[in-house]
Image 1: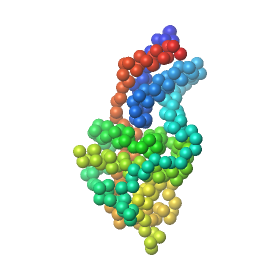
Image 2: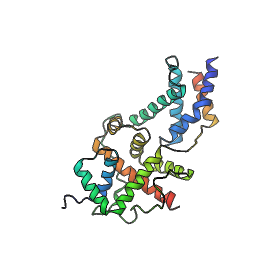
Image 3: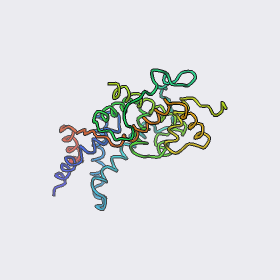
Image 4: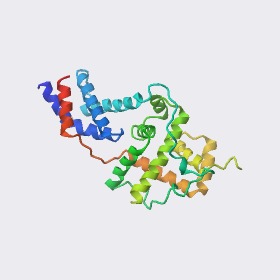
Length: 185
Length: 79
């Protein structure tokens, strides 16, 4: 089989899968396309070293996952102090109690049951994209990639206390956004 | 007594530490006391737990455009 044919087959077979995976984890579509292209290029160059005991799909996804984490890493190659503005300061009043506008309201759903509506997932995607960059990166690495807090701090070059502040703010924002767009709509 | 009283801001912060298994005994006790009397923070814990649980099971089906697929194929062939 000619290598060029195989390249075409690869893209047809795995292109959409890799893209769907990536677009859920980064902020925009153009970036996701670049990461997928990069994944194929790296895999293509390394195809001689590919061992057939792992499935081709698993192998490509492992490369893709590393590309995504590399993308996060690039954004903070030198040590940084977490500096995004606090976009949750209005959630609590001076006594640090919930404000009326931002307090959690009853959703009227069974929290134990899996979500069956597609609507929820598209709203979740929308709300993830609305997070600040660091909030989204930390949230994705923790809850989609299952990295440990220590690994995340290392990749993003942040302190452990920064990590907990970012996770906290990400959850406050996500919960609020989902309530506004899913429950109240 | 005031030592054991924590604010909603602090309580919601501790909810994440608890959820990731990184909470110390003292914080665990103060959080439990707070959640015992604060229905808003109980809701926060429930709802964020629900979001996290459903984060991995995304059902989106985004596709690459034919244009981008062609671009990638060309890049592969010329590499």
